[in-house]
Image (cartoon, rainbow, N blue to C red; front, side, top):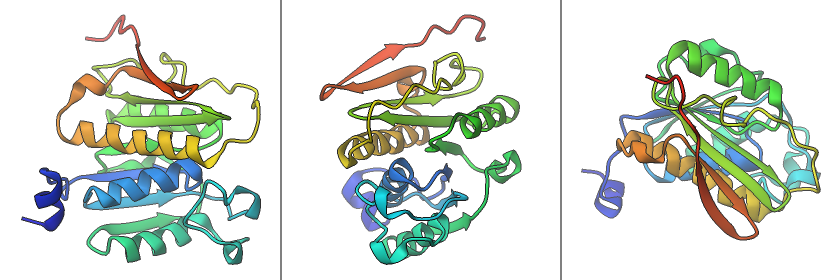
Length: 215
C-alpha cells in the first residue's frame, strides 16, 4: 500500500487521465490528480507560456515565456510526483489521443477544442470533465456517456463574452473541482455526474441537468 493510500484512504494508481489544456485550469487539475496518486497523465496543449498568464499558471516562471506549456508541465509534474507516468503532446487535441484513458479533462479556453472533446466522449464512451472560468465565475461538469447529458446539453459549449481576466483563485477552485470530479468517477461516486457545478460570488451550487433521452 502506498503512502498516498495510507494518507487518503483510496488508491487510484491504476487510473489514467488526459488533460487537454495546460493553462490555469489544466495546471491545477493536473497537480491535484498527481497529488491524489493517479497512475498516468497525458498533457495536451499546442500553446506557449505567456508572461501575462502567470498569475494563474503557477508552475511556470518568467524564464519559461515562449516555451511549450505541455512539455514544461510534464517536467514539473515529474519532479513533483515521480511515481506518476506523465507524458505530453505539444499539439492540438485529436480524438485518437484519448484511446485507453479513463477520463478526459477539458481545460481548454476555446469552444472548438471542447467540441472535439465532447464528440470524442460521445463516440467512444470515455467520460469527460469540463471546466470553464470567466472572471470570478466558473463551472465544472462531469459527463458519463449513456448516464448523463453531454457537454452541449449541459451548456458547456457556449462561449460567453469575457467580462474580465480570470484571477488565480477562480482557476484554482475550478481546476481542483475538475480533479475532484475525476476522482469521484474513479471511486464510483457517480452522484457527482450530470450536475453543473457553478462557482459564483464565493458560493458553489449544483444544477442537475435534465437527462431526457438517456437510457
